[in-house]
Image (cartoon, rainbow, N blue to C red; front, side, top):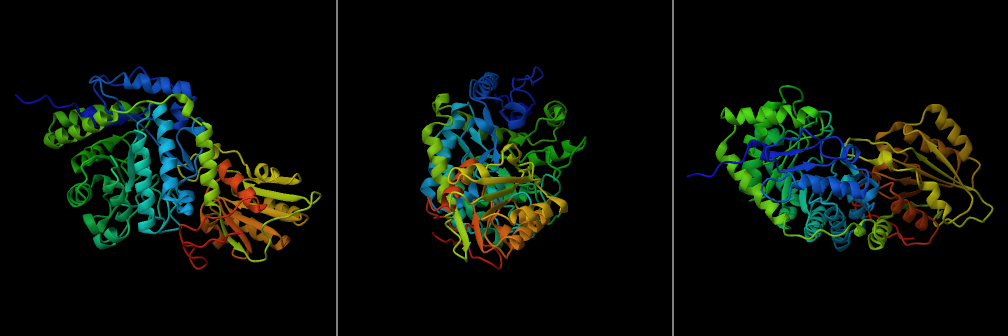
Length: 527
């Protein structure tokens, strides 16, 4: 007698809106859920209760796969519940793999305390294209071997805490010029290029024991022969490359199925079937109602009609069950680990180790103003620049950080893309200050921010420019003589910046990626 196969619903990671389980969750066994900050998270107690309720739905007694994006930096699925650790590029700037492992282990402990056992991290993509709209500081850098070291450290740290690591986005989307949330990138990499560049961090992550690989929604015509086929739907990539050549035996999870690189609407069922047949073990569905009801029902019918390979389905089920069994073997810490003193101190230490002084041509740093001199802090209001972003929830912190070291700091927070009138007014006001600290957020892709900084540089000779997100901002205002990178806008990063600006802390960080035409990877000045 053969075993009864798992229902097709076991190949799904569901999502929903609400802070309690909705009444219309499927009665069939699903393998887990993806939790979203804006839709499922209010406070620690609520989230712990929610995950306990969801784990309790399992009909086989194993823990559900409880998944979230807690990358650090610009993408914090836990919101204010967890410690705001610097993101990957900041960690890459430290060059310290042991520190990266510490951060990952602390992140894992906080996730585990909340009943979450899968982190959609680390990002293993390389920042080889500064104009990539959806990557930026989510990457550790642009050098394959260095990024590989950081990816392996992250995987190791998460696994030590009992949280499964997910290396993404396979086989590497660093060169993309289109955000997969809005369209299908086409990357024309040959296999030899992938082997020597993009795949190096993924191989390191797999060697370190990553339990999951997340597919990328981008086309690789050199491998598939097609420009319209995302890697998520391509067996050439998921079976031939990942399973056979790289010998990956863990779980393959798709990137989110609500992204425009995947077919949307009524015909999405075709892409869902194609993904399962191409080698995806788990489909990452999102909170739209049709993702919870119509798509699962359509997949059940597809399986009943023989459109899904049942032998592959059985093997995928074994891989998923093995992962859930593995995750059952870890203790759950208490909620007291969340934002504990040890983790807050670690976040500050990591942020301080990342601060990178790129230029100090006139010796303006460190600042030594008299008590009476007034300084001006300028930064744009944070916005989400991609759906994989939680920056909009971060309050502007630059002036607050500077005031910890000097009493007379005025503040201007502009709109994210300042108008011409704003730009003129800011430049006029900046002219009267003893020194100006102006932060930018991806100004290399925001002409308005670039114009604002260039106007300030013309109005005042004592200006410190700060790239508070991607390090390439200085290409948009190359006249800057004093330039610093923080790789993030979270309070620990800006507090570390302020301490460095006033000479209260060293500046050990080094660029983890080159700034084309201006500065090489590894560059950094110690004050």
